[in-house]
Length: 358
Ligand SMILES: [Zn+2]
Image (cartoon, rainbow, N blue to C red):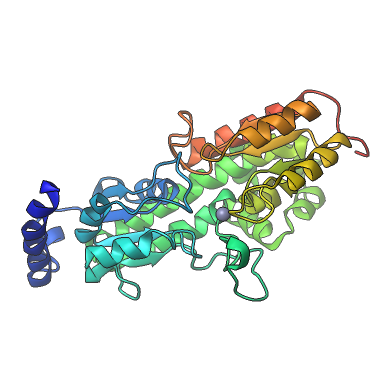
């Protein structure tokens, strides 16, 4: 209570200062104040910009990004921000609009240069024919969990670097160097350093984006062996489990599944954001009893009763994998998040016989 009374005059001073001297904050050696709604966006921004930015991340990696409590303390951070990075596609619809309205910072309002929707340029999947939030569906513009495909981070890195250059032109060279270093590290993590050195990260990324990577790896030979034999990184690790059907709690692994070749056969939630009914859980138990599916993927912030019960009945594994940096102690940045996810999935599916029909 007392905090809000102290806070109002202070905020007024800050707004006045920003209005009067819009460029003064960087000229004085200050850093660009960046607020990211989600940890993955923060991790990418940090990798690109390092010490040039003063970064604040609102949600934690163990929170459900769809449902974050818009606390007044976040408004304070937004009031002073030069840049706001959001996931977009309505992922944060329940909490970012109230926060930006409360912050009254014109620099980060929709349409201002400091308002950065990181879904720009992303090829969105599962876009519905008609916009609808019927029955509580929380994916009205298509699937918003695009950063579960690590190659989409290349697009996001371009968007974030572009925004940083706009608000801090003096740092343009540093941001471009940061972006390039991030993309190089990303390509090596996705494809393995050996293959990147041979074929080039940009070429591999283009083939992957076009859906022609498999053909390229199988049809191109180096020293008498197909390029596929040089595939490493996360894709190399996941080759052994390609085609594996899994059940996922929420419809949040569509991009991951497409990139790494696993198949999400069913969801614990009948629709994104809707809790499973007893009938739906019975249907899932019946599906699991057929023996093809050996793994249920769940998230840190959802109820575990349904998945534990299903796994116990069917004798399958259930693993909890975060979607965001900080969702597990091992996931300290965007790279270790995927190290962790691919390790856990590959290990869970490595033991035991392959499903029937493979
Ligand atoms: Zn979702």
